[in-house]
Length: 501
Image (cartoon, rainbow, N blue to C red; front, side, top):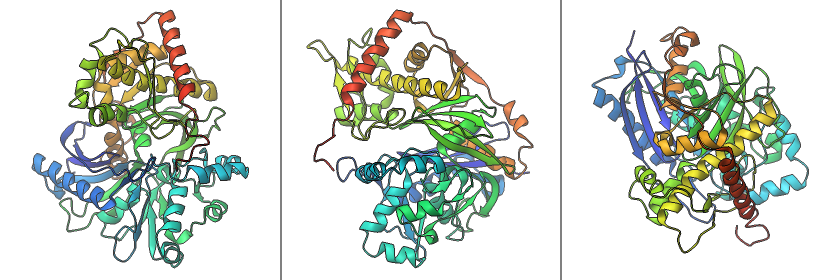
């Protein structure tokens, strides 16, 4: 048996490749950031060719660092930023337009038109999703409507659509496979999560030709194999899952009622609801967690648009820190937030508010406000947004959270983790392996090829690193929550009735 699983983790700001051994330990990792494009206010794009180039580069780098070749790999698993939309020419393999990123808001007004037509409830009933520019369908429609000749070529079967996983599989297989998995399909606004198929009524509503769509597969299965001209040549592609579903699996939240929260560019809380989809009454998303061994597991999800990205903004936008790691020392240079609240609604607000016209706001500034207060308010905003989602999730599910398993880069920030525990009033549990998104993709791939025998074997590998327990007094917590809610109300609807497009 080969010794390692290669996990591709294609994120919003960087591409990574991680090699895992049989005990779920990291053997090697490589990462590259890639360029973000902001052509207009509220627009966010990536160069799909650069995504592939960066991903291919880190795959080769991770294997070289470990001194491995493709014969040392049992399988390859893919996890990816979801909803980001790519359309490419089937013959040339070239994208017809930049990738439109999940954060992009250009189709917000079109979504409002559909809401006014009373279509939101029907769409939610079929897809489990709220009607929002966040998802892929309106982005795909925009490309077909605005790229010259794209709709005609799409209808003729000459173009292919995919979320990032489908794009990577196409490139990894040299154009031989056009597939996605159920988790990514369930984030498009085009997939019926109950019938588990592309929905014809939704395709007609968004004017999407079925010919552009990928085939939908299980999350853990041998889908294809990599092209012979890659460093990881002829390796089974055996696991695919969107990043948050992969993280839920990597955190071993395999039983209904278990919850994880990932602190990445955005923030994503996911609750395993087992074999039944729960329709949210509090603006959460009903989604597919994974399909393994022919069985579909469902989840409730709360999506926060801006989490770790607010720290990047402190670094790149304001220039008050040199690196993201510096935010903790700056935040702890002051004893509290000094009454300052930062609502990072840079591209609107996600769950549970879903206000696409909200915008970023800083409130409570005085002459005594320092960079430390701004940094602390930024960190606290990440935790406050998580609290909002958790409260909505408990209301929908009727489940009282016992612990929150966390992962993602920001979990290394002890100040943030402690504040998070203080706000949600339950223990925050950080695992020893923080790369749970990539680990989930590796687990899904490894199960498909028999590298691991069962999920029971995998559950024994999960280990705690540290538990953060609530310590702040109740009155202080209530005052902080009150200040946050006031700030959120000020940020909402900022662009309503404005001329910004």
